[in-house]
Image (cartoon, rainbow, N blue to C red; front, side, top):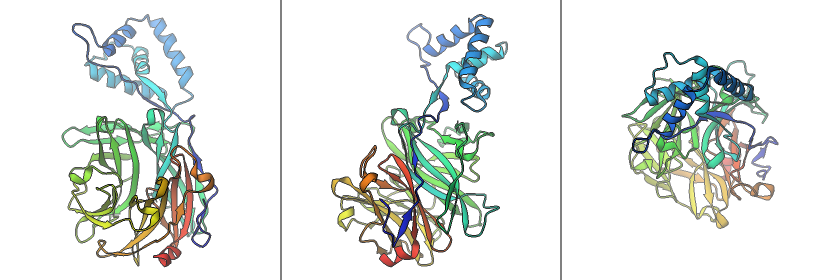
Amino acid sequence: MPPSASLGWVHPLRLYAEPARTVVRPFHLALQGHGSRKSRLEALVDNILALDPAVVSQELELVLSDFGQRHWQIEDVLDQRFNQVAWQLKLDPVGIPRATRRLIGGYFCHEYSYAAAAVMNPSAVRHPDQSGLKEGSVRFIMAERAVGEGHISSIAFREGIVTEERELTLQPQPPFATAALLAAAEPRSGINFLRRHRDSPISGTVIFPVTEAQSNGLEDLRLVEFRHDDGSREWLGTYAAYGSHEMTAELFRTADFDHFALEPIQGRGAQQKGMALFPRKIGGGYAMLGRADGKNVTLIRSPSFTRWDEGAVLLEPRFPWELVQIGNCGSPIELDAGWLVLTHGVGAMRKYSIGAMLLDKDDPSKVLGRTARPLVSAADQDRAGYVPNVVYTCGAMRVGKDQLFVPYGVADSSICFGFFAISAILNLL
């Protein structure tokens, strides 16, 4: 539903699921055998090694003809996957022909349609590169939750330009999507370092789960451009990592969107969804909004990015549209008037709406105002979808002096783009 004309406007552009967009992902077989029997992984590799060289060439040619035009640098992908399998098996690659190595890699890969089911819950931040733009324009990066087979969520990106005049242009997606590559890991800390493929733009890059703690999906990345005390910038974001048995919060970090770190968050506050960082230190420490009790917005403080304990209740449901629960819709946005925070509320029939609140700039534990009515709610055609009656954003972005650019998910099925006058929002608080 377009929001009230006095407050804002929804751009006609909308993003939907795209089953045709696929990436190559590792296919895993068990490494453990039964008794004296070899594992399935070992047995399959032995069978490939035993193939006649002419058969190997024929089968590899079939793989390349089937998938070479569908994916970037498919030979490199097969080489990398072979190296991973060889490391698992402690297999010496010396003496194994390149064609055989690549065919082994092909047997341990598969195509995955990462956005076949839905795209939803986006957040937007300023792009590191703001060169060559006309006045009043901002280049941005949007992170979106993409849902594919098995309801596994990953993080995809789109680049675009938005203006004070509410013009919006998304950079075209490349014909191929590419999974970010695991570059290194620190087992003790649990940090995993990934890098963007050298030939893939940001808009063609997807981040998939890489650990057991993430195996069932990465959900709802709340991006924020963080300004450190020395003036340097880093793009951070919290997200929910779902493993086989539990959900925990983790931290996304990048200085350039070429290299990424995925880092577990420690402390009692890590067992919650919807954590959102303030974009700078406050009072000498870091601050975060959360919802540890599942109902109320909490304010958490910490001397560290990666350890968050229990916070104090900041906001409780008050109005009918938010009585079930209330939470943040992304990181606070700094204004002269204070910290503007978009909120989500859940009302009757579990209908989600988006509202706002304003926090004191020096002491964010003080709520200066909140909206008694939502800025936007699901209605009409926007009620139907994968999860009906939901509108939700994981982060908005200020454009110019008075525009708030708000990408938001609809019914957990698509993404819309809204524009709101900040002054009009403040008048409602």
